[in-house]
Every structure is written in C-alpha cells, then in structure tokens.
Length: 116
Image (cartoon, rainbow, N blue to C red):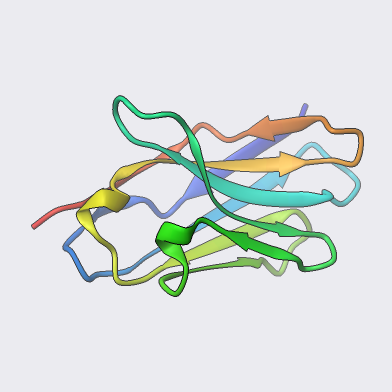
C-alpha cells in the first residue's frame, strides 16, 4: 500500500519561510513525477509545483521565484522550499506521487497558515 507522509507545515508570518517534505512508502520503483498541490477554503485544489523523474520542473505562476521544488536524498521524496510567504499562500498542501501507468496517490495534507 502506497502512503505519502508530509511534514513541515505550520504558522508563519508574512515574508517568512517554510519547508515541506514528503516521503513515499510502499512503492519499490521510482515515481514518474511528484508534486505539491494546495487547497484553500472554498477553492479548488491547484498545482503548486511538480518535478519529473528527469528533473523537469513546473510551477504555478503565483509561486514562481518564491518556491523551489526538489527531490530528497531518498527515492520518492520531494521537498518544497517556500520563501517570501504571503497570506494568500494559506492552504492545505498535499503531496502527490504519479507513476507511469497514470495512477497517482495523495498525502493526507499539511496546513500552511501565513498570518501576522
């Protein structure tokens, strides 16, 4: 059973930074891509950033220049470094793992709150 464990969310003041981590277990082969999505209250879930197994990166326009996605040291891990956080970044952040068959899994989500 594939499981994704997210960590690193919390409360931060505007302009601050947070680092989210996601590690997958229960999968023996490498993912084709991993990514971070977020969902704010009353809004649809949206892509924040993604990285493929050949290191192609994709960012939402709203986070370009502020967020950086990278793979972790272990297989099927991904990190999202978030700098210059804004109140509008407040949301539940979800990790996603995608395999070549098109099947994907979600993490349970981690809350990020940007507020003074």
